[in-house]
Image 1 (cartoon, chains in turn yellow, red):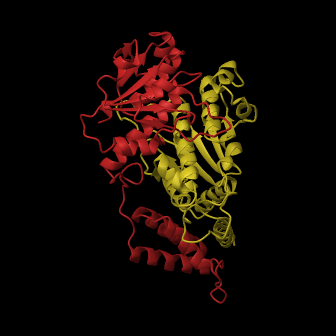
Image 2: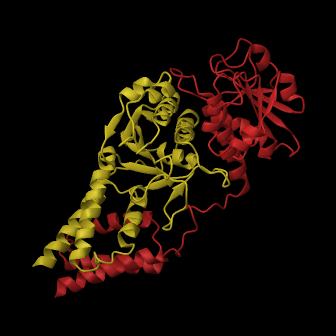
Image 3: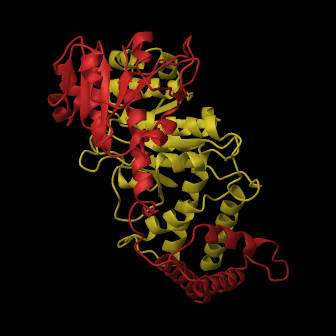
Length: 244
Length: 244
């Protein structure tokens, strides 16, 4: 199951951090690393800090944007240092592990880590179902990226190691439908935005926080494929009526 | 209480690891660092990797032997990668935290970390009340020292943070809006059903499981009053367009 968890590093500046993150991953039994526009990669510093985890670096995907990193992921979680203006579901690493542990084995999970100096952008954070926050000392809260990867992958591993038999289904029963992947969700949000503009509920000149609030609402529910299909069908019906 | 936990690094080779350990400590609210015969210290690499935790480095005690490091400590725990020939009480980091958390505040605890290449010696391990082992991937078990300090200090902090205030806000910040009540939700679902019938997406003769699925989706997200208002506004806009 740890194999289905992808670590996504966004715009990492220091290649040493990429190497250290790869080492932390492999120590904890993870192998799927994706780098979104790394500043310098491949790089000798990455290899040096990876120690024996060069296979994780060699197999890392390097992509141009977050869409490519997330397209086949059903659950997206962003590491977040700060509380945001719009409240978003936030968990600590242990709570994250408790969410991930009971998921079916074929659910692909992505955990995003932002830039060394300023983390993830608001847009990137709004792509996420949940945010994960490590409860740091508030007076010295800037955690090294590889250290954050270490803590979170440690918790994910611990829940496997400890929890295998305590696992209880998250929904009272096995969920009967595959969860929607990131691409399906993004197409849903595009379609929703388009439809709300058509019916003049959304003013593209003054969007306010309408789309972020709707994204947050739907992402919180972790929709499955049938639910997304229903919503898409609903939007198509609305557009058809509107154009008649 | 975290102030009473001393991190002891024994014969560390790379000063960068000392700096990264100091940073991890400060992030987690610890400040008492003791270095037993470090190979190179002070050193620019230590300062660089410490980021803003140079105060921890500056206040670090540098000593010649383990006796000096441990003389005022009541509980000594050694980080151990391998199982040893002589069985010894061994705990994982969470169990260590559960041991440390209820101790009286004036008990001084030391956690020892060994050399990069071969850890602690048998003599050193036998100075310890307990050994602490991080449950790593057995196929790639050599954990960076600073990463090990990070994981263990994280667990020590978590037991404080979780033990202290369980009333932590669920959403990263106080949710800013009151949750919708049952009446508001039922009116939303009535309105949704009416609108979906208007746009001919829902056939009242053959409703299938459409409304139950949509109810389940929205209820899962536990919507607040503003979110319900947005959805109601959206439905009104759709109906208005449709009737034009």
